[in-house]
Image 1 (cartoon, helix red, strand yellow):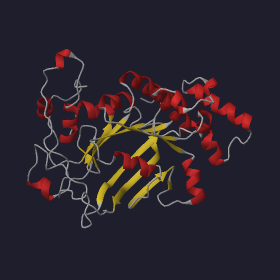
Image 2 (tube, rainbow, N blue to C red):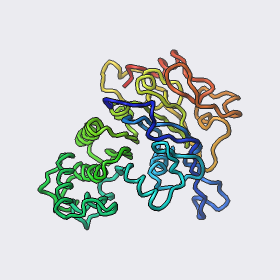
Image 3 (cartoon, rainbow, N blue to C red):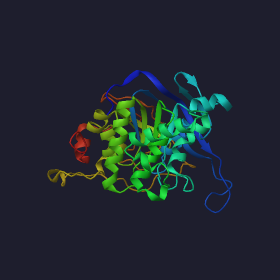
Image 4 (cartoon, one colour):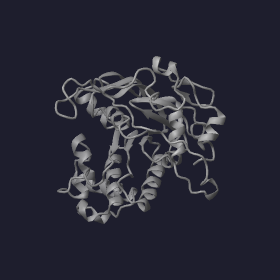
Amino acid sequence: MSAAVDTDTPLVEVRDLVKHFAPGGGLIAPRNAGAVRAVDGISFAIGRGETLGLVGESGCGKSTTARLLMRLLDATSGQIFFEGQDITRLKGPRLKAIRRQAQMIFQDPYSSLNPRKTVGSIIAEPFAIHGLHRDRGERKREVQQLMETVGLNPEHYNRYPHEFSGGQRQRIGVARALALRPKLLIADEPVSALDVSIQAQVLNLLRNLQRSLGLTVVLIAHDLSVVRHMCDRVAVMYLGKIVEIGPNEPLYGSPCHPYTGALLSAVPVPDPSLHGRPRRLLGGDPPSPANPPSGCSFHTRCPKAAELCSAQEPMLEPKGSGTDVACHYPLSGEEREAMGVGSSAI
């Protein structure tokens, strides 16, 4: 986790952010289908120097949230503030200036790098776009310094991506993201396409860079153990909404939302003494984001669902455990124990 976190001064603040995709035609998405509610009214803030983890099942809206923060997608409604400035509708030079401050590391290191360009030109591309380091010699020195920072051999400046391993390619992506010295770094599943033996190297690199450069980081990941290792706070998403958000230790030690508890219950643990711990796995599949259920979006799969859950959507609010939770009937200590989740679970 980061060494110094200024949570009182948000670098990024999101208010009631919504992204709906219009339905298309065809067999899978007929023309009379409803809009896909990829992100459906989320609010959160990220302090300077903080690392926020976004977790949840595939299709819950994590990557869409990342692209909205980067302004790679336009929001349907809501606001995104960066250093107090509303950037939700910025265009042209003003948006370009903001993009110097926020960069992204993509999931697949194989498809995110142009195979026809050398590593040097890939890392130097942000300089060309923003008119920095116009002198070729100076630009080369900057690129080689970045390569050294992320653990690559600067002498490989003229090599092509296919000459590098997957882990090395992801380091190239990290170097490119750091080229403009951004304040915000968004890492979208940065190690999911890598071998397990390489994942720890890339994650430790990101953590060390975050500490040394004072970066604010949004980490999207499926591996909850990785998120606990890397993040100061965690936001759990389900069907386009945040259902629980809070500091690392309270969320892992005393999860309140039944969905958070189910996610933690499914995590394998290396401790042999915990191999017989109880688990409560979710049944069924998440509802379609084009036709979400009424009330609480999780009630169709929740073992605690009652009549109120289908009639009224719960608000995200503090529940006394240190996290904010959107649930009418949060987990009790006995229920957490029955699910095998808590401070010793991961």
